[in-house]
Amino acid sequence: MAWRPTQYLIGGELDNTHLGKVTGWMRFAGMNDKVMFDLQGDFHRDIRGAKIRFTGDAAETDPSADAEEYMKGFALHHIGKVGDMTAGLPPADYVAGYCYLEWYGEENGRVVIELEPTQVEVIGTPIPARESYPASRDTQKRNMAEFLDDIAAETNLPAERVVCIGGDTAVTAVRRMANDRVRGMKLLPHEIRKILPPLYAQDGKGGKAIAYIKYFTPSGSWTWYITEGSPISDESGKEVDFHFFGLVDGQDKELGYVALSELESVRGPMGLPIERDLWWKPKTLEEIAPEMFRSDERTEGQG
Image (cartoon, rainbow, N blue to C red; front, side, top):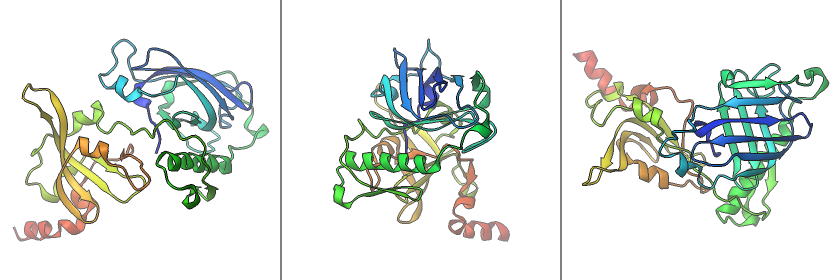
């Protein structure tokens, strides 16, 4: 439930040497200008009072074809609040082992970037951990609740009927200016497309077929486990869509087809777009829904 432009990040620098404030810049593929930051708040204790410099995997001179489209509408100046910002070093107040950069901007709402430790350099000496307090979870829960309130405003839910909850923190909806948009994440990035088998490649495997992608509605109960897919082209050979096959867990569990354009257009009960599970590890369909494939097991046993 956030804008996640990690794959388009070229690099950047964030500065928390003036406590209570995080300033800096980032560069993204698909954008000609630097993105500037003026945020209220602090880093986590592992880097509080220091600067961090980081690099992304995107190329500045040869950006991917979809970078400009994805970054369209991303503000050039982010004013707002620091969320959880940590290099993942000890002491871990939130996450450990990787860099997590989260903020809440006036124009784009919640934004999250996640990086490997090797992509981050700490500049200067952070304040000794014993001399500062852990990042306030109550503050972060309130940030999330207020972000959800913005989404409620974006989707025109009546204020008198909305209470937004982040963790155990509730915020009664107010009619602040809504975010510019609730931006959907990239559902089929290049690295996922490369590992996904083409349509019919796993035909006949039944429960042994492997699901390589998991899509889900963050504000609902629908989930798509994708086993294979192929592009759809027009008469000139230009790709116009992408056709998936897999297991759909919605009102019932069933196998079927779905187009990428359909997934991109779906909105859940709160108006939120479908997301891709970034931590999904490939599993067989019988691991996901064993009740659907018990007859396959009996047949194999008889053979």
